[in-house]
View 1 (cartoon, rainbow, N blue to C red):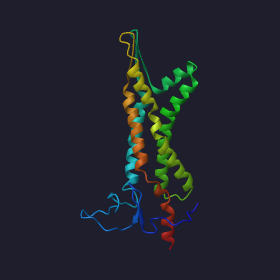
View 2: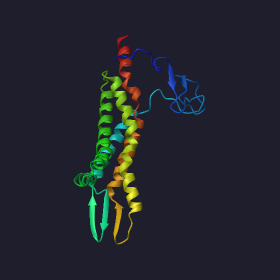
View 3: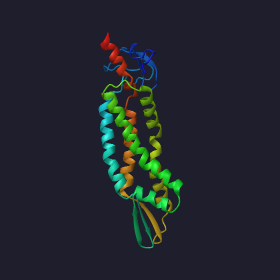
View 4: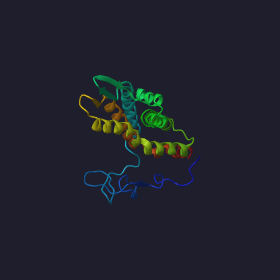
Amino acid sequence: MKPTAPTARAAGLVACSVCHLLCPGKPAARPDGAHRCPRCGARLHSRKPDSIARTWALVIAACIFYIPANVLPMTTVTSLGAVQSDTIMSGVIYFVQSGSWPIALVIFIASVFVPLLKLAILGYLLISVQRQSRKRQKDRTRLYLVTEAVGRWSMLDVFVVTILVALVNLGALATIQAGPAALHFAAVVVITMFAAMSFDPRLIWDAWQAKETSDE
């Protein structure tokens, strides 16, 4: 779908990323040589600098951390001398076998499905922008907004582990300790949040402007 309204960039305007003031595209430079917002003093950029490269770097880093986050133990339970380590999936399987389907579903969606889906969506958006695709811009923008909104909820598993570690400490009877996967999983969540923040969704719509410029 071709956008019908003119863009701020085409009109020679730049939106401040901090206070959202719409500024002239080439305002007077400050003594440091940078173009800054006249209201809050933040640097003005028509698009986020190096958005694609930074987002790719963060997505790749998150993919690397995602593997140990699902392979290594998330929790280590010691009960009456017996030690049991559980990964995210083994915890999901345990709740399924015990009949706690809602808990298993919440953990699977928040800890396995959502992070993987975020990485897949960000990868798709990056590839489509690099290929200058002009298809389904609205749908791709909605995908980005959903990715940015649900990112923080992936921390649910880390919160549960933190609460269990704090509450279950009965000495020789039973203790719960966070496994090495907790740190890797937290890294995946935080990195994907930064990846979503570094991606500039306006790049999705720039393909139309580039096509119109080349046609003139």
